[in-house]
Structures are given as C-alpha cells and as structure tokens.
Image 1: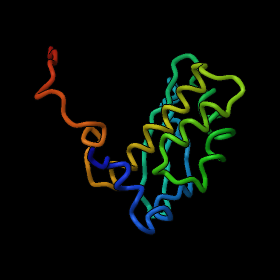
Image 2: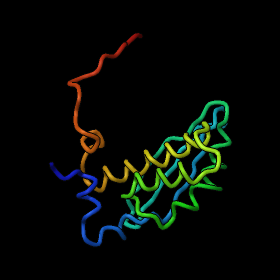
Image 3: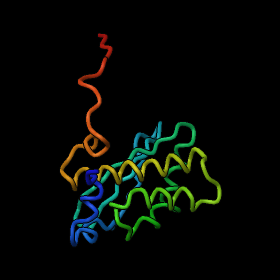
Length: 141
C-alpha cells in the first residue's frame, strides 16, 4: 500500500507551522447576486479559495462563515482537512442544512486548494488521478 499525497504533506518536518491558518476572508461580490467566496491564508502565505454561493440564501453564508466558521479556523493546521470537516459538521447543533453544508463545502474546497499548491500537484492528482482523456462540450454561437 502506497503513501498518499496527503500523508506525505502532513509528515514533512516543521511543515505544520507553515500550514497554520492565519486568516480567512469572506468576499461578497456582484451586488445583484451576492456571489460568496472564502479565501484562507496560511502562515507560509499559501492561499486557498472556496466558493460558497447559495441561491436564495446568499447573505446567510457570509454571516455563518464570519461568525461561526472563520473564528474556529484560525490557528488550525490546513493539512488536517478531514479533521476540520468533521469538527464543523459534527460541532453544529443543527446539521445538514443548506447554509451549514455550503459553508463547510467552501472551507473544504479552500483547504484542498491549499494542499494542492503546497504539494505542487494538481488537485485531480491528489484525489486519485485522471479518469478521462477529455470531456464532451457543447458550443454554440
């Protein structure tokens, strides 16, 4: 059984400090639609982006992220993706709602983005490799 990329990144000596989350910003753009993006920054300056837009409840997401999730992200190791996911998922009294799950999803995607950048591998490679040679698309003028 081989060693996964996640285990390799997490086992580097001294790298836990580099992976420490020092800030997380919630960015709301496009006033008519309120697209929500989460940007997480590690001590080493690596950033990860996660998308958190939820149609019909757009402004609930920035509040949930800023008031509940971001304060609990600061100081955590960005390489402990599953641990952070479980903490947020199981730590909330009301679970599995659309606002909670969209917010957790944004954190999860941003953390995987950080892991991909720190490992210098594309995310698809970290998640098991390529599964297709191409994708069908529809183009129309």
